[in-house]
Image: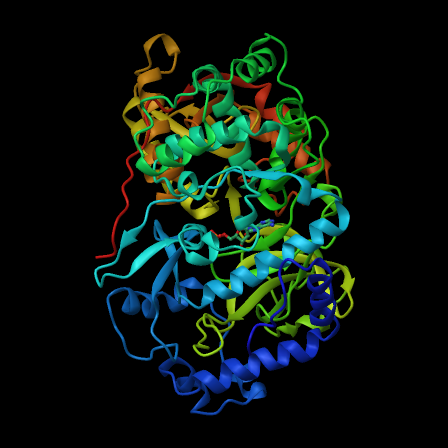
Length: 608
Ligand code: AMP
């Protein structure tokens, strides 16, 4: 099914197209599935279930609903260079590394060059929706802080990189319709700079130099924008000095950045440097700094739903009440939905799934209360179609995706569980709208990391071995994502007791801080590669902290949960704390705090 063509600069045409797609959601979905099945019926994977047929009903009854573990062997074959038609009719050109991990390594989703067209189509449709609600955005610029991440090569020479890095490096991004009007403050070269620090410095510098032209400020996720604010706090003096002198600091070594900045930082501008210094260095609060620094800004465009909701209050503080706009819901596997009411409050944001992005199915949760225990066991096996979901119900999203364009239509993921739990909040024409509820089974997330209960437990099990020689036992634990400072960090609450069968080796009954710091580090070292990359390379997560609580704390936590309706029989210590009340119980009983003394190891590893 070819992508509908229209002029991306024509807002009305964009809105009309969205109306058509959502009005014909059922038909479009059927066409998508038909196309996928007829194109790929001969591939090894599909024919093993469908025997060469391309019948839609057969697809629904015969093809299993899978998750990453099920398809990992196929992906590894591709990564190692198997060129046979395993799953798709056309060769795979790259692997997209998702922020989710499997066995400590980033997940990889095969893709093709043509898939970029589908993403570009999706991005272009975000523009008319925003323009419909916010007037005059075309009269100024967007300061979007975007970054690339490291790429790795698999043993077969395929490139494996995150989906956004792949998009930013594509000609689709360079040639995006609005780029040629110079409507973004960050030159492409600064976005493509592989060194995040230089990239951030240069993008902020460009944004500051053009501060009176900026009408919107944004990043992909809320966490990235907050990092930029922290960076501004740390580097405003250097930035001002460069603006004052009209010369880029010597430590910016990246050739692309230097060349791009030579067109932006053209001459000394002491007035601008003074103005920025007054705002940043006046000794006052940084409340509303975004509005003060970029005074014409109408909105802050960052995703603040899902795990990013934890940053809303901090962002509200810095943005001085500007609307926080979550425009889209997407993943490495597929781009899913658009927020048709971009100015709605973060808690009211819903995404309308765009019916020609993939074939969507939904696994209903057995019982809506089960959403708190979304561990994959609680969904019904019967998946329903996009247009058949029911208002107010919770579902897990399942996708069958394209990875190709018109002539290269190929498909990759068949009935793949994305791992996201969504709730139906309404319908736009025939297309349902969903609130993002949560990622299945993720307990902690600060940036792109997603740590699940099992990973956390495994990491803790290794760390707690360090306690045994001292006769200490870990009796219970829970965790918390502390985002009160930037960058946020993981906090573990540990309750410890003495093993009465062993001599108490603690010096004067106090905890050995070197040992406890080693425990912090050991947990970090055992967490997955995305966590370690965020800690070591991106510095988007701060040192892990262990807060030791006094004996009896976890009993008090249980009392609270039971008083709030948990069954005493079935009570399990929550492995992640979300409520302020529970946090207060834990924090008020902390006897000692320890931080990881150094960053964990990390290096981009090719598949071998
Ligand atoms: P990745 O494949 O690493 O890009 O991660 C994709 C995942 O990020 C999705 O499956 C969601 O769990 C999460 N995500 C993406 N967009 C949003 C959004 N707008 N709101 C909440 N979570 C999101």
